[in-house]
Structure formats: C-alpha cells, structure tokens
Image (cartoon, rainbow, N blue to C red):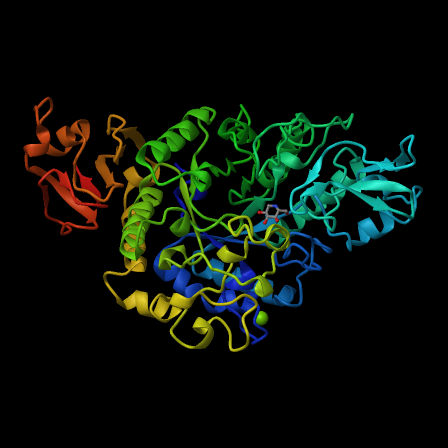
Length: 552
Ligand code: NOJ
Ligand code: MG
C-alpha cells in the first residue's frame, strides 16, 4: 500500500504572500486558515508552509531566532494549532519547514556563543581565529562563499577575535553539527513540531549541514550561479550528513502516522540529491528533485531531466516533481513563449506533465492560476539576494513571491492594507474568484487533472514507460497500474505533430501497424486541451501545444 505522501499532491504556501487576515500587508496563519476551503476544493492533499517562526526577517524567515515559536506577524501558537486542526479536519496534511543548517544571528544560542570563547554554546557554531598575513592584512580562513552576499562566507566577530561561518547571509551563522549538545538541541526542535502533530518536515539545505573538518578551500569551477565559480566539495555534501538524516528519520519514524521528511538538496547533480534517500531507504523519504527548475522548454531537455531523476533514485525510492518554488523564477516565466497565448498554452502542457508523471507533485501557490513572475521595481525589492544582484532580475526571488491573487478587488483580495510586495498587474482577470467559475481557465485545468490523478491508481502510483522514441517535440509516456493504462501525449511545440509512432500504436491498439498516425484511435480521452472528454481519441495528430491523457 502506497504511503500518503506518495499518493499526495503537495501545495507550497509562502506564508507572507498567501492571505493577510489583519491588514498589515503580510500574509499570516489566520489568513491561511481562512483559505483552507479553497485548498480542499482544488483537491490538493498536503500543504508545505514555509517558515513562520520568530525571525529578524533578514532572509524572510529562513533566519530563525526561536525554533519553537511563532513570529507575531504570522500569529501565535494558538493560531498555529487552530490552523493545524482545521487543516486536519478537512483532510489536509501539514508539513512545516525545518531550517537547522543555520540560525539567525539574533538567536539566543548565537548571542551566547559569540560573547566569549569560553561560553558553553561557543562550539555550537563554526569559528576560525582571525589571523593577519605578513602584510598585516586579515586573511579569510578559506575561499568558501556566502551565497546571498556574493562574498566570503567568513564574518568577523570582534568579541572573540574569530570569524564565524555564514554561507547564505552574514545574519545566518552556520551551526556546528559535530557538537553533540547542538545536535541534541536540534533533535528537540525536530520533536517539538512532531509532538504538536505536524505531518512532517520540508528540510532546508540538508546537504550543507556539515562542513569539511579541515576547512579546505573549494576548487575553482567556471560555472556561475548557483555555484559561484566553485566546486562545493568541502562546504557541502560531507559524508556525515547521511548519519544525521538517519537519526532524524529514526525520530520521525518513532511517531505514529507516517510523518514525512522531504529534504532540499541544493545542488545541480540529481545523483547527489537522490543519494539522500539512503541506499537502504533509511534517510529522507523524498529528496527534492529540483532539476526541472533549471530546464528549458524543450521536449528533449525535460524528458532527459525526468529520466535522469528516475535513474538516479535508489531502488524503491519514490520520485517527486517540482516546477516552481519560492527560490526560482516561476515556470510560467521560464517556459514563456513568444506571446501571451503561447505562454498560456505552455503552462497547460506543463501542468499536465507535472500532474501525470510518476512521483509526488509539488504545486507552488498561484501556479494553478498562471500567476506571472512579478516585475519588481528596485525600490520595492525585499529579497537580500535580489537587492545584491540587482538588476539581474532572475537572481532575485521577490518576483516569485508576490501576493496570491484571490479576486478582482484592491490588492487582489490578498490584504486590506498595503501588500508587502506589489501585486502582479494581471490580477483583475487572473484570480481565484474569476478562474473558479471559468471552465477554460488554467485553474479549471489544474482541477481537472487533480481529480483525474486522484481517481487513478495508474497515475498516482503506477509505472511509467516513455513511448516517444526521443521525439524532438513531443513527450509521451504510458502509466500503468492496477487494471489501468493511461497514455499521456504532450506536444511542446507550436505546430501540429503526429503522435510518435510507439505511442500511436498503443493508442490505436494496433501493435505493429505501420503509419499508425494515420489510424483513428479508439482509446478514450480522459483529459485534453483540445479534445472532448469521453470521446474516442480519433485522429492521432496532436494540435499545437496539445496535452492529451487517454485510457488505452
Ligand atoms: C533554502 C531556502 O529555500 C531559501 O529560501 C533560503 O533562503 C535558504 N535555504 C537559506 O535558508
Ligand atoms: Mg497579516
């Protein structure tokens, strides 16, 4: 029997941007609670809520100053408990963010640690003495970089005459996982939210937890962002991290109800990411597959990426798929066509891909509406990375964090106040209220595909076989499970294309028939951007940007 998280469709909520209940312009927990009906109605099964803990918000909540509290902007512990209970009452699971690679520099642990080399918690962080070279200049301990500062990751601490390590911003000091007390304290954090009843964790940058014990410099590499011209062999992916994953897994497994661990593995190599399932499947339940976040709109490229991910997984591991999240430009922008109509058509094909592949799909809030990538004026930028890298728009992350578009009212119904980031211009027609009632909307298409996936063993849990012969324009695959066989045929190009031969044969039910594309197929249309549902597939020619799911 498949686990709930294998069958589930996840929906990521960036809490600042989902729904503001108190008019301060920032989304909050009560706001999320007030929109649970919507989430239940579109049929997603589980929510991942990005951080809502106390934080100075230097990295919008990924800099935590109290692991077991709630930031007053978002509500309080009561509002969290209410949200969790209300979600559970609607059959929605809730997964929360676990950010234990670093803390905020305002976390009491760090405040104590930095005060003196003798402080009991000093060793809970990573330090190196500040040394001068022969010219009397301060030398950084090695070449490790701070991802969001585009500079060295070593930051001065005058009180102790040492550097501390912060590989995101200077405000996110890295903890020392080799210290047993720190480790125990972090495991208490893990238990805290599980005790409260959350269904699992999305774990932040798992593959950065432990650094090289000798602090060796990384070799140079001529690949820019996100690797900043280095091969990160010494500051990431150290072997000890697998042991930590196993320990956290033991904790999660000690709770009833299949709590899930989904880890962010920040790297470009899918094999590296896949390794965090553990060869014995005793580490993370799912390591995020981020490869599709970096792929172009191309049948060859997307298919290659998907197949590589399947191949990289250890036997028995369950795949997952993400097209957009809070760190990368929305896929509607990355996959954009030459005009709005083409972009809209592509987003339908992309939705069909995401929701019919083998592997748990993750939907990023607003993607179901076709929410655009925001274009944020310099004065409105909030993301530290965006501010640092302006005007390189695709590196900043505010564009994918704009307010959820609920209705055609002021501020798209997100807030009665001034939204913390500007609302996208298209909100008057692209919003939940309008799209819920419009049968041709992207939201209706997502809902149709979600209903289909949930009703079908083959789509949810079945096997996958690519049957497109490596076609340049189309991706086709067969999903089979139980007694069902579904063909998914996607035309990623702006011209009509024949269904590739191998899939056409299956659809036509005529094994070996030459020129099957000319045959009219009797397979039934279950969902299509172009054909009527319930009819025979008929002509085996795919219209421009057609997505077709057929029973065969
Ligand atoms: C990855 C998170 O997804 C990102 O938003 C955050 O800034 C960094 N980790 C640092 O926590
Ligand atoms: Mg608010």
